[in-house]
Length: 136
Image (cartoon, rainbow, N blue to C red; front, side, top):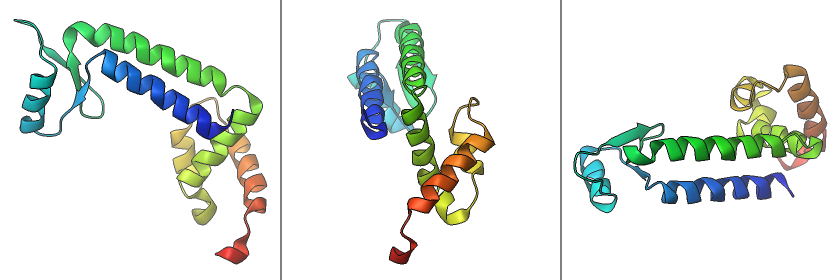
C-alpha cells in the first residue's frame, strides 16, 4: 500500500463515519438551518459542534468520538510500518513546501509527537537529493 492509498482509505473511513453520525458542516446561520432540515433531531434534542465547522445530533456525539478515535488509532498503527512512516514524512514535507523553504517547522506541526526533528531532517535530505532541480 502506498501513502496515497492509505490516505484515501483513511478519508473513506472518515467519510463513512460522517454519514453514519449525520454530521453536517455549517459556516453561517443559514447553512446551520439547512443542515438541521437535512439532519433533524427529536423533540428536546440538541446538536453538538465539532471542530472544523461540523455539527451532529448530540445523541450521536459519543458514537462519533469513539469512531474517530478508532480510525485515528488504526491510521497511527499503519504509519508504524517503516516505509509508510517515511513516505508520510516525505508527503508532509512536500505538502508544507519544505523543499522550497528549507524549513521543517510546519511539517513538524503536521506530524504527531512520535516524530523527531532528526528523523524528519533525514527524510528531507534523502528526498531532496531525488529532486531534479534542472526542471525548476
